[in-house]
Each structure stands twice: as structure tokens, then as C-alpha cells.
Length: 191
Image 1 (cartoon, one colour):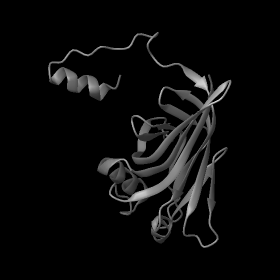
Image 2 (image 1 turned 180 degrees about the vertical axis):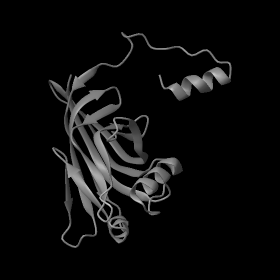
Image 3 (image 1 turned 45 degrees about the vertical axis):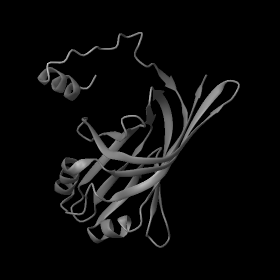
């Protein structure tokens, strides 16, 4: 249960039920990928501000030869309810100052609609919000279930996160009103 949800419920005088351990979702091994390509104009805008996108192994970033878009690819390693944990990550680096914002071990949550990251100081932050998902499908095999999410649109998660990125990287380029990227999430787990 999120601390913010509890605080809101208490302020409204509501009683909240919490899940018992038996009701909580179990974490299970999973495989697959979360990948997204930067939206039109994003990479050139960041480049003008000396900001580059770098993969953190086993994640990767591949930039087109023209430098107009980049594709981030992250392997999925576990699933807990609607949260899909990826390995590796990526970082945004200001090449002039050397300052980076690193998104490690991203968790892509399709119900909460966020991409949560572990930052360099060990805290968690929801870097992106998922503003839309174009399509969802499920393929059930004899021993596995694969969930497929196509057209996952990413934006900076609110003005506070945009302000945090702008301050850390010494820029004014980040805004929650602009689509940062669009991608796909494919997750396979045992039945």
C-alpha cells in the first residue's frame, strides 16, 4: 500500500483494508523485453542541451546513424502482479558537466502506469508515466503465458519529475507535456 494512499484515506476519514501476505501478488521469474524508441525531435533536442542517452548493461541503447532517434532495450527478469522488473537500465548524461541521472532496474507497471527506477542514491522514482497503451494481448501456451503491450507511450512523470531532471542535468528541456518515447513490453512467465 502506498504511503500517499494511506495519508489521503486518513485525511478523508476512510478505513483502508490492506492485503494479507496470502493476498499479495507473488514475484515470479519472467523473460521478455521492454523497449522504446525516442519520439520525433527528442534526441536532437537533448543533443542541443548536451544530453545523451546511454545504456546500462544488460540494457542497451542503439542510436540511428542520423542521430534522430534512439532505441532503449531492457530484458525483463521478474513479474509481481502488474509490475514487470527489468535488468540493467539507462542514464541521461550531460556531456558538458558530466552529471548523470541513472535509471537502474526499471519496473514497468501497466496498472499504475509508471516506469519506476532506482536512482544512484538508492531511492526510487517514477521517471516516466505511461500515458497510453495502444493494444494489449495475451498468448497462453501449454506451460507459459505471454502478455504483449504495444504502443506504450512514455512521458516524463509530472512537473516535479521534469523539474528534478532539469535541475540535475542543468537544462530546461524536460517537460511532462511532450511524449518522450513509444515502445513495447513483452513478458513471458510460467503458468
